[in-house]
Length: 216
Image (tube, rainbow, N blue to C red):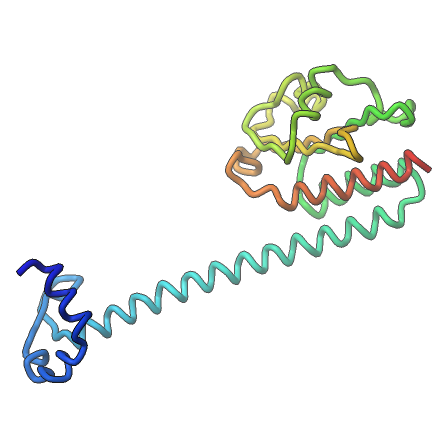
């Protein structure tokens, strides 16, 4: 008989374990970690303990993710309140920079918008290249990478040569009208495989606040 046949038989005839309980008690198998043999019942206990450890580890991981998400949610809430309290574009921009740098610990933040009704006296509405605008328009969700895209490196000024990770968040109100660029010297701060749900929500929140004052 093949091992698969034995396993199939036992699955189909669970009464076997009751009828031959004494025989099972006399069967000893290798300990999973070596060194001695143990009974089937001991092996089952070890298996259950291993599964319990795996479940505990998974639970700790879920709790950690939950705590991290709660912290991000709280930071997003504070930014929302600050944007609601902003009286003009300058206050909106100040709130964005303050919260992203202080609350979210993003060391380098750049925002550019190209709405024609923007404030020409604000650097955030200074002209950008067509390549930057096309790149922002091509984004359907935040994009994270290890290198500055198109010619956005110049937007970070003297810090640009030291930056090792970037995230680009399109700002849209119907159509894309701006770009939020985040960067860090830490190569693991933003990376291609990271989740972007909260970055997307931040972009939507900031875009809505900007659009509100631009349309006012």
